[in-house]
Image (cartoon, rainbow, N blue to C red; front, side, top):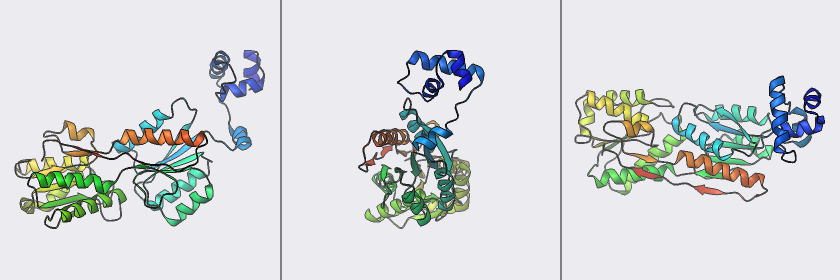
Length: 327
């Protein structure tokens, strides 16, 4: 830092403030310091600053999977929403496991984040204790947690699936099957299954057939195999309600290989409003859960927190039925 200070003709303290993005240093000086630091290959070591201020400058985020387009879109919305704040994001993947979440949360907390964002509202008791003792802001997203740890930004999976079931019933579809991950391997998937079953019961429809597609995360291949598992029994159904659009796409393609006409012989629905639902032929009826908006709302909550607002926020972004050509 002294070397950089000597080159730009400023004090080491000014260089330190400039590299931290401190606006008390003029924009011209900040740019000059950054340019020379880059040319000299100097990277600011924030360890002492973190120790002194107890502020790390980053927010920890957990997601179940890094290759899920919806979670990626939420992360993008959060990143875009924090643009210009100086805050950075540190990402951890839980692989849909509450046990793995405990491990990831423990590792993230060791890095002293200023807040933590958790995808999901179901956690192990040990995880809850860790977060309560950490005394940092916690935001649970994607679910509407029944016993929140702090702030909540999400939607009701059950309500979203209820929209699907009502749309199917209005189109004369009564005999439904739900294709989703194995019991206990995907909490959000379980909530969707329960939502389908509850909605069907409320409408007086026959009992929903539940098809286990395998352990989460389930994909196009799982949807294909679920239809193969059904075999000729699929002709007894009016609709396949899938836990996600990729699963629906896999099921749709296997149905077409079997000579089943969609939607004349069978309706198929997805969840999440993935790109694949739009480009599919026929396009897939699905539910938009506003993944990007969730991320942006979380960014707003974080900015409120850092501005000193302490009241817990509960934000339901809702969901919207997107009618395709498969019903």
